[in-house]
Amino acid sequence: MHTPYGHLTYCTNIHAGENWEEHFAQLRQFIPAVKAEVSPAAPFGIGLRLSNLASLELSKEPALEAFRQWLKEQDCYVFTMNGFPYGGFHREKVKDDVHTPDWTTAERVAYTIRLFRILAALLPEGMEGGISTSPLSYKIWHRCGEEHKAVMESATLNMLLVVEQLVSIHRKGGPLLHLDVEPEPDGMLENSKEYIDWYFQHLLPAGVIFLEDKFGMKEEEAILAIKQHVQLCYDVCHFAVSYEDPLVVLERLHFFGLKTGKVQISAALKAEFRDAASRQQATGAFAEFDESVYLHQVIARTGDDKKIHYPDLPQALSDKDNEAVQEWRAHFHVPVFVQQFGALTSTRDDITRVLQRQAAKPFTQHLEVETYTWEVLPAGLKQEMGASIAREMKWVLQQLELS
Image 1: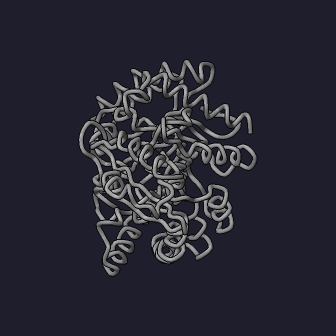
Image 2: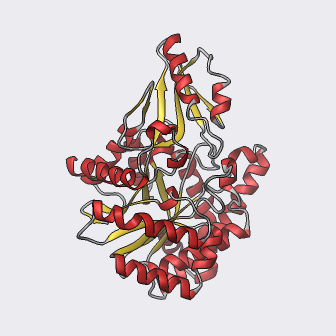
Image 3: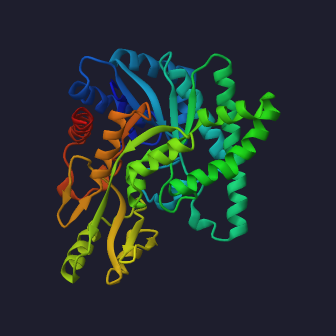
């Protein structure tokens, strides 16, 4: 929905289903009720997640036209999409396969271009659209320096194939569309420094040459086009797990002239270890969130402010008695309206600071609540899904209005 602070939605990756029929059934089940709760008198925006299979099915004109008609009937619109998970995302082991296929592959390019064509066909006139995507690849797969460099170069060149399509769409009178790169722990790009370094050391140098060749652009025009069409997806949970101060990150992006295409509003789990008793209590509480579907990367902070990275909760739990560690933060998206989770807390304060900044000095047009872990939350945290979604969106609106 359109608010004074930008378009606000929730990401439909919370809903199970991998083909379009399953996706659409979930939208029909939940969207009308959520809209009635949070936007009864105004159009409701949808943050659409499509698997590769669903995108193939929805790209066919009869399915696309039927969806357009449903959106019109429900007074809804699509303005952002989640193109990070390519395949199955619920009720099966995902873990590091969420990065498969990565940006070194033709499959990732074709999927992303297909999503943009669908978005361009659905997007209301005069509105810009964005699709969030993976941070190139999974860093743990490419530990060798030379391999890391080769992957970075290959992934960047493939991403520029998408940029070519977005430039062409815009030049032909179509909407402004941007690919929103989403750093996360253990991704090839996992924090603001790595994102900015990649942008200036890989994307812009290769992109200027690429766009000069494809469109005859001058250097300044090519740089502007890249900055328009490749933006950041600021997932608040991910940056909090990396202990990044949101205001510092946003000022850094502003300094370098880089745009934020979307904020994914999400909270991570955290705990500080004050003594042996609190360590035991907190790590025991973290163990309750150790489930088999998603990656839950943990970054620990030591007394001398060094960071220890664990690829998933089991590896962190095996090092739970490390007395040098004073804090854990875990990549587990938890409901944003809850601050305390027993012995654990959340990084919700980072969300509040980001929303205050957005209200005071807007830096994006797209805001998307993303608590996709509803099905794997401990039983005590589960409410009815639709009510939980509406409660999260109302909480976000309240924070924006209080800013």
